[in-house]
Image 1 (cartoon, rainbow, N blue to C red):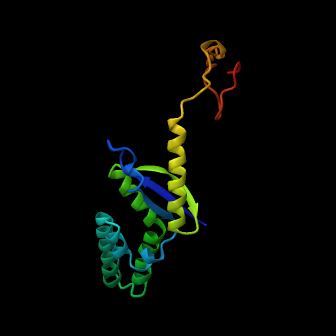
Image 2 (cartoon, rainbow, N blue to C red):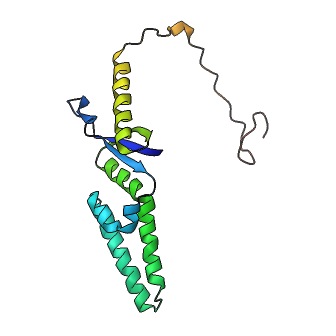
Length: 166
């Protein structure tokens, strides 16, 4: 099963309209991002990342021809493609966060359609639970007394300070 990170747009005045606009991003390796990294990044509207990938690929190719590395330049470009294949989903999530989207959670499913169904069913049940008022509330007398402040014993050697020893 694959893990899908659910991103919701910033809350609007309407309320429940965010569920329908949510984006599910599969976590893991993306083969298409590995094969054609710049096109995959442009498809997901990651403009700056696509420009960086094209610039780095061109620089590696130029460096390979100028330095006389010959066969090493394609392998260096392959590393760029591998990076985009592995980290493309993380770049997409970071771009959504920069645009004000918030992470709802993670859903595990076999495919995107099942993940969307699981997300919608959990989101509806969470909304129903939030609407119910809490029936039992602790009284002020049932809370434990606050703990006494801890005294520092001075500097310690190592990671932990042992009370009463200096």
